[in-house]
Length: 250
Image 1 (tube, helix red, strand yellow):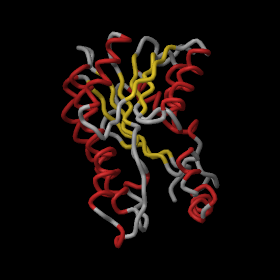
Image 2 (cartoon, rainbow, N blue to C red):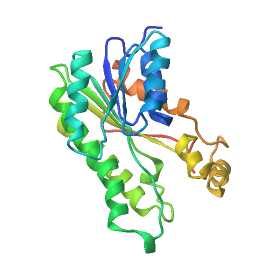
Image 3 (tube, helix red, strand yellow):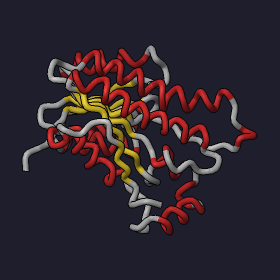
Image 4 (tube, one colour):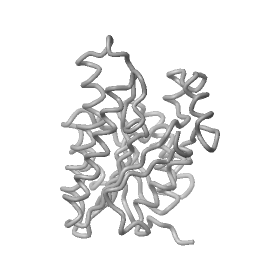
């Protein structure tokens, strides 16, 4: 079976760990040259690059904090400097934090919105500027939280609802320029972040497993293949869609 992304150059934001790292590795297996973007986790990003290169792929790590608008043009400039072009942007970088209404502050709001929404929009803007005449692909990693608004997740859920709305609006705006925009909305996925926040051993995990038709939470490898599909020519007539990858409705 031919590689789906042969000859393509993809930027995966927040790719040093978790879902982003798995997407970067999967894209390499499908033939893409990959930029492993990271904000602070340089060592982890370099390990992802090392694994890709050892398996015969092409990858580089580029530091850029997507919540800082000034960092975003640098990410694309370095990508083009190293690989000559950019074809695909995976807006994966994000942060999640849950707080009851009594503890919500402007700082909390801005921390989530500056990265999850503004960073995504500005990265997309830069991608559009740098895509070639054949267009490109933008895939936003959203969340089931966009429609399953859990208690104490008001701000996080709002950021992901915004991502879904942005996906649809940009698909309509950019379609005439041969740019497709879709979102992938994972359910609860076992990542380093989930472990560090104690969610993996929490009642939330048990609740999700009980309600999920497949009776398990996800793994990063459950997410990467559909992202690769949407980035490929196999999905050339798909845009403005939101794909829930969550083990079924719960």
